[in-house]
Length: 247
Image 1: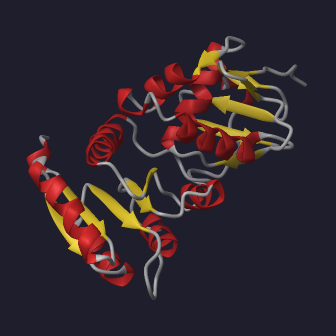
Image 2: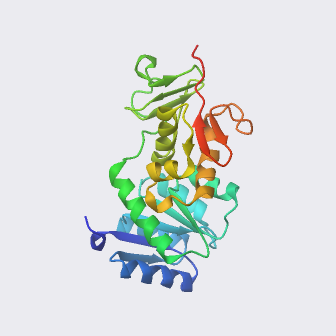
């Protein structure tokens, strides 16, 4: 489906920002729906059924975090957070609630369009992972896993991850990041190689972006995220996965 058939919902309370985003998207061929606050945005998610949502965080009455959480209860539509709150903790909070991407304000037009295109592309290529507790509730079969050391187990085919006997949920992007590192272990992957293979060429210079996602995945799989044992940063080079001995 071409861009002209894709609908982007922009949820932004600042009129100037809302109009600028709309103008850039429409010039690129997208159909654009607008919402002036979180409540209006939630309603339009279900009325319009957009292909992607661009969501501001700081809004009155219902902020972007709450909107993201509510949308994720019923929809897997890609969500890009457009935010002036670029601290890693704030970004990770958005990712935890189900956001797929973030763009800091003030934003660059080319970055906005590239990220929009990349997220639409990934939504087609990689459907959402199963949620925790889905299916019959049984644990992932240990005899079918691709990696298992007793603490961490992962099945690439089923796209399931287990940490300490509990299935956890990774976003499709987080899963691809972890899968790439495991498959290439113990090789050190340069930052740009990871960015291009997981996110696409639009992201190859965004090393800070990669660091945020690495931090997020570490918080889900590491025994002590502050002293990581799996995902190791080789300074100025890249990241590698350190396999552990099984049980």
